[in-house]
Image 1 (cartoon, one colour):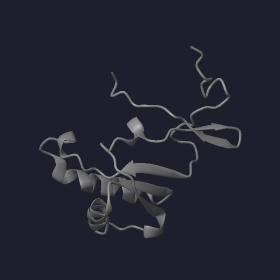
Image 2: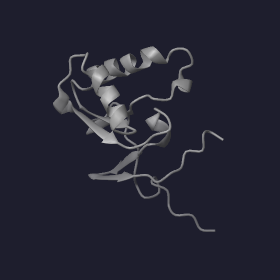
Image 3: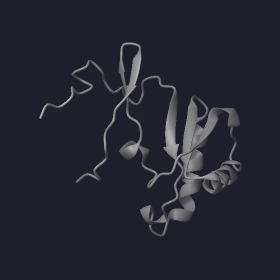
Length: 123
């Protein structure tokens, strides 16, 4: 079997977290089992993350559907936000950990690409 070249073999690299970027992607938390006995506080933690991030960059928030978007907006309406710095994307998610399943942007010079990988739950 011949495997396709890796992004690194094609000259791409993953930028560091601190490098300039267009936006930060978050998924609004909805799986209560991820935070046993602590979920009630989690939307407020996310609201604080969004509040701090949105001061300097666009924040894109994944929500499962209109109902989850309404819940997120209600929480976020309680913190001081510039709504122009937020975007909601209705994309169903299993978990809030976008780093495990979301797009992974890589760059080569002025080119941006996405990797096509499948999360295996660390198996």
